[in-house]
Image (cartoon, rainbow, N blue to C red; front, side):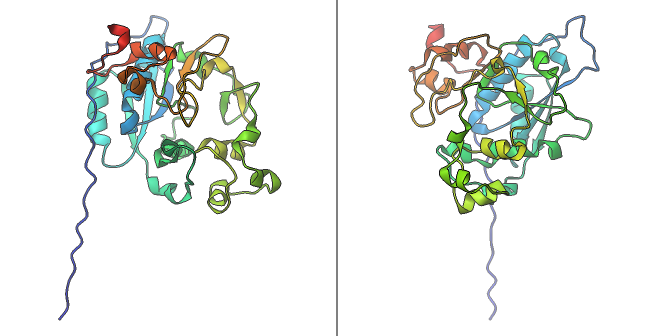
Length: 289
């Protein structure tokens, strides 16, 4: 007698998304030209959605031509409808599109790093932006979800690329040897993510493959566009102060995220710079009390 075994596949249930206040409408100034679109890409991680909303709000608030901002959001399958509704209800006038990213493109190539959040497939989606974005988009700004922009993003958009494919903030005191293990420096190799699975050659998530691929052939942008490390280190997330100099972008890279520290009533001083952009409906920060 033949026995048929049935297999039931369950569609992943969508997480309960936080509820956000509706942001005010931001309109272009008289000097804005409708054709001057600025394309911005971000990921939509359900665990970082509160940060994404704050980042978008900050971009709109400080933009001279907010209606010219066009957002390209990358998300995993099954969640796009709920995410679309959340963004649309928070920013009714926002020009945006959500693209589905296939995690299987990178899942088998990801190696465990020092922090679990860095190992998520969506963290690598930016690598595929050239394939995901429409052909008409020939230039795009990628931003993380744990930041706020406190300057007009148009200034960054108009940076002269000088023929480079990628532009990124320059760190005068950065020691890139710290990103890689002794194994890499003793035996330079190709196909970096595959090799990383076989013998560990770098420490942090998706940034080292980028550095390796472009081999330093990157246009340097003023470091004011990434006041980084405000989330502290990758292990304990200890508080850090601002670096000296002008600031256009505040970035809570590291373990500590401002919304979590504010909610726990154990914020760092710099977290109060993020709080005014928080649209989370139930937020009760010490800053407001």
